[in-house]
Length: 207
Image 1 (cartoon, helix red, strand yellow):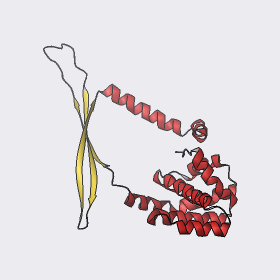
Image 2 (cartoon, rainbow, N blue to C red; image 1 turned 30 degrees about the vertical axis):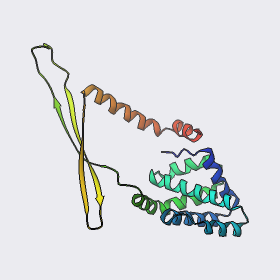
Image 3 (spheres, helix red, strand yellow; image 1 turned 90 degrees about the vertical axis):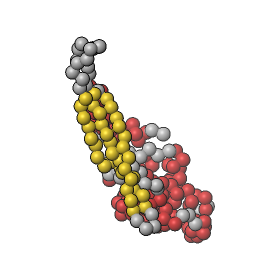
Image 4 (spheres, rainbow, N blue to C red; image 1 turned 90 degrees about the horizontal axis):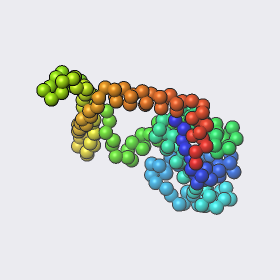
């Protein structure tokens, strides 16, 4: 999967070309601290004085880097996809490598922090299915199309100060076998298409 970066995001990240790789790494650590504890205007002002850049430019650079790292970590993109995603920024190879190292070093920590900030989402627990076939009826002489019934069981964790409990909820789905096979085939085709070089080129140029 490739990240689709907006023009505003690209402009914010362009600030990183104007500073040393060590400064980019420091901005990465600042972004992680902001993610855990929230932003601090004093840190922006101190960095701006040190680098002789406007505060707004430093703030955009740090927040742009924070967005890049959090989105990459949230989607768990691979090293190759990360490098392909930042190619559209036009950075030099050394800067791209610095960004990759930041992502590899901190993506697990970022995902852990995001999981604490975001409300828990339902997760897959089990899937039950059955095939319903009506062999004959008085109104229909020919065999009726069979139906596939599925019961999707999801879990929802609930944390409290005293204990952690798990709630279960289910979703009942129904379709005929031909439609189910078509859906599976379409999804497999889409997943295969996303891995082609042609799709990667298109995604890199989407604005």
